[in-house]
Length: 187
Image 1 (tube, helix red, strand yellow):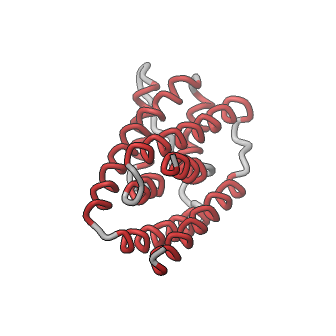
Image 2: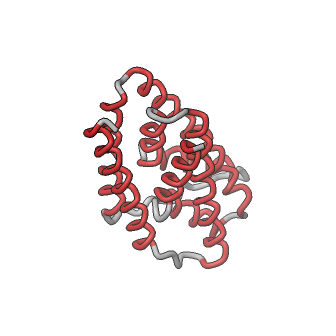
Image 3: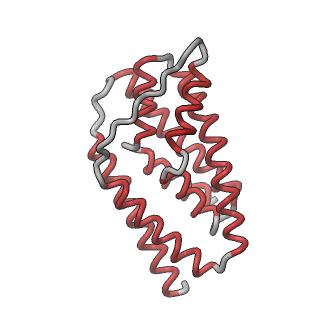
């Protein structure tokens, strides 16, 4: 259960103010909520499943102390990455035809590939049980995106992006420091 809640919390916080949440918000201002949420859920299922498998394989192959130190460094990096303002605005993928679901799925797979959410999930899966890590990460991403969809449908573009980015960045930094302390002390 710890892996489920940890991955849910970290991915949920990572998605707040992230480009994918802004992408969900943008899609929600143009399309009906259910196809947008469905596309996000499919993308999360796929992308986070792959990152969980990679993380679990690394966890089986590497010593626990090395994983804790490596994971701590990655999370500190994610924190710094999250705290920096994003200069480039990601264009909303153009959805052609009547397939909003497939368009959203494709856009999210591209937006999240190699993103901190994917890397965080792989890192967690290297030290935690894979299935609860995957489920928690998947639900965390879907819930955060669901919030963006609701906000997008109701309020449009009035999200305090800076505040949510700072909260997510601080959470990553704190988790990274915790992992580093654990890795270096061997606790």
